[in-house]
Length: 244
Image 1 (cartoon, rainbow, N blue to C red):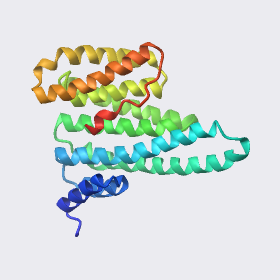
Image 2 (image 1 turned 180 degrees about the horizontal axis):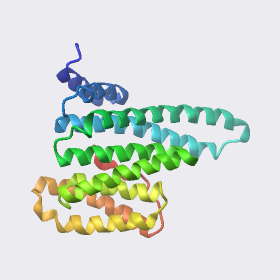
Image 3 (image 1 turned 180 degrees about the vertical axis):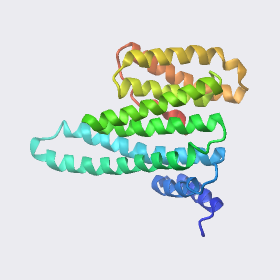
Image 4 (image 1 turned 90 degrees about the vertical axis):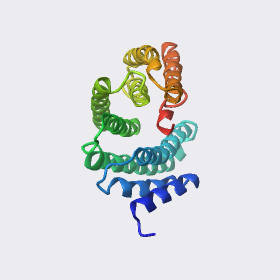
């Protein structure tokens, strides 16, 4: 194949079916860097590609971190070396999509929906970076994530309805960020509760199919809110909405 837009999108879908997430990333990266605004399907494919690739590495990092606590001191150097390998891959992946978002996507977004979607992605990948970094680097990534999330929230509040699935997904991830990265459960609970109340009240403005999608996100918010109110941590990071 010569690598036209249509061919890259086709190959990305094929890679997704084959669960070759890194290949899907490369095909959708080519599409995103072509300089033309992405269609809805292309936008979603880009998000799925990077999310799946990042999730595999985030899960690997967590497994290694947990495993290290159960091993002897003699094994720690090898474990930490392997952990750094995973961190390097995740760091490069996050920097890659953040660069694409800043150079090609956010500035060229022609609709509020697209802009909020991309700003949410920017917040997400800075959050993923903050998860495995420490010290000042952790603080810098967390700061960038909060700036992106808040900018997206400001735009969503003005331009998208309270029950819009992208606005709900943004609030879901922003609340997770407050709880898991900033360790500020009070703000996470406040945002989740406000979003639940306003989103539920506005469900009637949506068509039946959109209502179904939004209800699923509202349920994730409710699940997280219940855990946070009880002082617990969600078993997953609450970002499944990106794959819907």
